[in-house]
Image 1: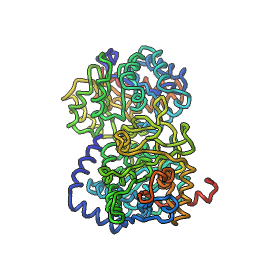
Image 2 (image 1 turned 90 degrees about the horizontal axis):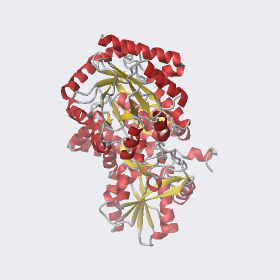
Image 3 (image 1 turned 45 degrees about the vertical axis):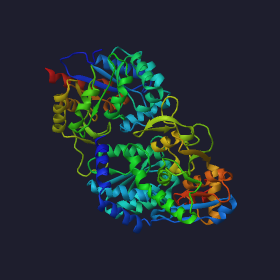
Image 4 (image 1 turned 120 degrees about the horizontal axis):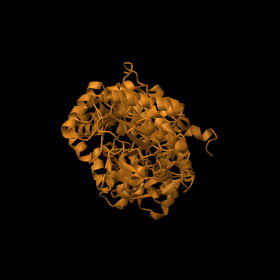
Length: 270
Length: 370
């Protein structure tokens, strides 16, 4: 399965928490993402302890769990979505207790082409890959500004056919602060610390030397400006917190954000 | 992951340095008050029918064994050039020990603590603040130790270059379980030497409470190659039902949380289960992975006692020996008490009194616990 619709244009990926705010509205949000030209959907299977997520996704996860969304429900809801390519984002334990092989098979059957598991380092992902279905199913390596080039070889090994590489734009969690904004010096409350744009560009350049896999940048992308900044150096961007915040305000603001991001990425490919 | 790799490298480097070891040894002696005594509890022995010794970690500076690990890791933090220390805490003992060491070394300190624990361990919150730490209340999830750890991990990845995350339990990602065990193993080394001197033979058993398992790992380690039975006592809470206890080894299954694969209390869908214990320091759904291993190979045995049994032992030790243990440590006493008939008159048993009960005493008077 191809992971993005057009090879020429930059990929716009959107993260949504499964079943949030309700299963119906989640379905609608995916549909409108499809209509607005989103290339890749990242469905969040909510987990009780989302250590890589900031307050927004913590709260959407908690609310989804409270309303009964779990592993089974997430796969069920996902299997009935519009045909947008999708990956499942969750944490290790829900899949581990299910059994890796069984879980990956079921996830693939629900229409996913891969998994993003932020609490499993690449060192451990390589041990889990053998449990993946043989054909077109991948685990996504996450690369942060702190990832040393010495580990890039592992990134290449984990990024199998069709996989993308998820570059985390900042030191921190998914979150609240625009990546274009620099926190006040010494501000201890800053939830995320954006990596300098140049730092990400260098990181991506280094990755390109070892792998041809597409590189998408996520964490802290909130606006068309951010999208352009990272879209310029990467093959696409992933937006999560900002999309959920917009979705909370309603379908109007949500659609406007997606259009803004799409336009801003399309400008780059023109 | 990069941070963990750096930490592992730094730890291995510093561990072999004579200057580091010397400084740590001096601080453990002159600052923390080591060695702690191994005390023969005569009246408890008499009522139990065997020779009961208490390893008095409650006499350490800050009131619990936590300082052993904090000193070791804080010196490592300084070696790594970090100026800010963060930590999670449940009962507040680790938070107090961390804040203490940070004050001593002149480092910034932030302690994450679940909102529920802030309430039930108020005395320790006050102590941490006095020591100059900023205490961040975590109101997510179950508002206990696990959630404090989530938040501390989030802080760490955000400020990874300047910040050292000082984990207090033998849990979490590698190298923490190994490192914490190494720093706490001083407890067992001392106890082994002390009991040899006093009894001239090995003890029949060692009992320690297990939440994440740092004090138990610390006292067990020196005894691993001996014939002494090692018993970890988990929190059986209010009962065996889901959400009522935090007995991960007795009732949990394999799971993955906080960067470790270990026994975990999960719901069938893989979400982490709610847990409960009267002792905030045991109120954790996972357990250090080395305990999982020791259980699996049969070298240590893990049992659980209820809140009520722990509380009874709290009163028992207070009344018989004049030593009010922390509610956590009272589990070790209760676990032994439950099994006391296994031991003969000439057998000796060591109970690890990992901390003192001062922090819990107010709760007894506030009508919260009867």
